[in-house]
Length: 180
Image (cartoon, rainbow, N blue to C red):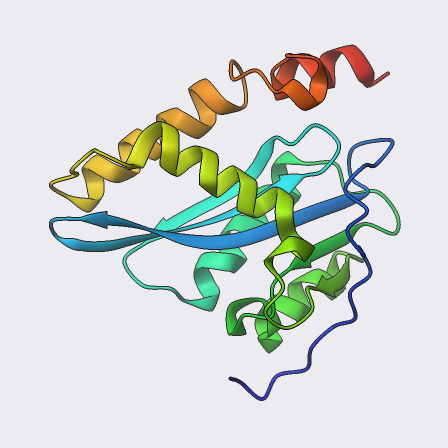
């Protein structure tokens, strides 16, 4: 529990958007290593479901979320009225994170309390990542896990992994076929 303001749920589980830069979803998960936890923050664009921002670290901090958002701003499409949706975690509710949204004219949206379905696309990405990369694997170091996650996101997931949602195209292929 934290004392930062909670934003309204602007997304309302409307996960289908008509173009990039209309809505981004973010979340944070953890990956076990023999050195301890590695935390991963991601930002996905709902249009093509591509991970456009990510950050990894040994602690779950607001900077982790800020770094993923900064990467998304650099790599993604920021349309007028863009919604950034997340859970109610302190990382996303912090003054610093909300200020970054504000200076980039991005609307803040948060899930209802304890309702993972409100952020189902981000949760689904983490489920897929853990099934395909994490479960059954022991990472000796955080760096080993970071390298594997980087390759999974940047080489496999965004470019090659086929999604039934897109008629079995990868996020990159879907974007190329559907953005003028």
